[in-house]
Every structure is written in C-alpha cells, then in structure tokens.
Image 1 (cartoon, one colour):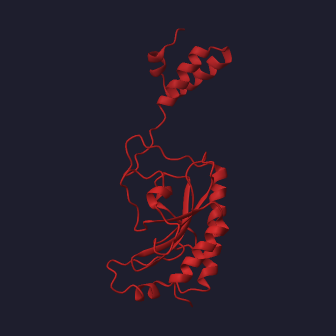
Image 2 (spheres, helix red, strand yellow):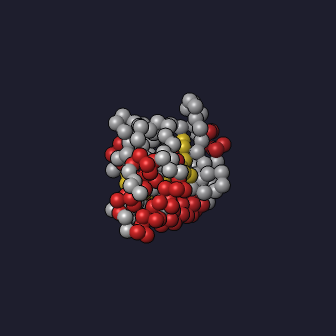
Image 3 (cartoon, rainbow, N blue to C red):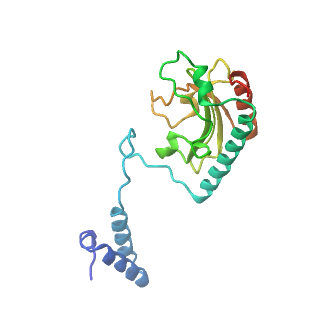
Length: 217
C-alpha cells in the first residue's frame, strides 16, 4: 500500500505505531520517516510558563544532574547548620534589627523542611537547578547559591554569593551573573554579587559576609 503524510495522519495513534514497527521490520525507510514525523507532531505541547516568551522550552534535567543538585543542596544545608550555631538567624531578631524597613519579610536560612531553598529560575525551568540559602536584614538579602544553567555548560555548577556592593568588593550586577535574564528583567531585591567555581571558596566568602552583618548567638 502507498503511504503519504495525509494517510498516516488519518490513522489512530496505535495504528501509526504498528505501521512504524512493520515498516522497520521490512526496511521501508520512507514509511518509517513518515510515522516518526507523525508521532513527533502528536506529542503534547509543553505548557507555557508565566512570564516567559512564546516558544520557551524548559531546560532538561537528567538523573545525573539531579544527583549533582542533591550534593549541592547537602553542602548548603551543612553550612547553614554550622552558621546557625554561631549566629542568631531568628525571624524575631531580624525584625527587631529591621524596624523602619517597609514591607520587611525575614528570611530563614533553609526552607520549612530544613532543606536548601529552590530558586525561581529552577521552578520556571530556566536552569537545571538553582538551590540557595539566604538571610535578610532591612533592605539587604545575603545569599549563597549553587546554580547549573544547562547540562552542557562547561563551567559546571557556579556558586554565587549575593549581597550589597558595599560589602562585596568583586561585585557584579545580577544581569552579568545570570545570562538567561531578559533585557531589563529584575528578580528579587538582590542587585548582584560575586561568583565562584569552588563551593569551599564561596562558602568562606559567604561566611565572612555573614560575620559582618548577623548578630551572634
């Protein structure tokens, strides 16, 4: 039987799959190509992401990158627990030190389950993962995060220490640290920070920054 695009498109999904297998068995590459193209066209379209332009596709996440994310999250939690033994990160203390700051919302270092927080970039599918810990006083947010832009990124996981330029001497604007941001786009209230390729180096810098601003236990 002669097959073309129109005839294949008129088949049910199961019939297209059966035809594909039959064509593969007989070595009929022309029909194989027709069936494969039809199956691709029938795949459900990804749901649009709020705030993203039409055609935006979420970044893929492999099992390998998920394991790497778990490792980064574990490092962040360990650091947060060590710092919590030295400094008072309670919301009550943060509010007391931020009197007069309009719409102040204190940050807990970790999420409600005691894990590293998940950044908006990851939730929106703009990066492979974006995990962080953060603390807020007045109008400033002090954060340490591990972020992987794509599976193919040769730089691998980047560690960013975010805070005010008055403290971080090698400060870079957020637009330079986050290449996926669209022109003029702003996220959160943190204007930028410093970037490191090594977690321990970033952890030391974050610890030093916290020592400058957080009250001790």
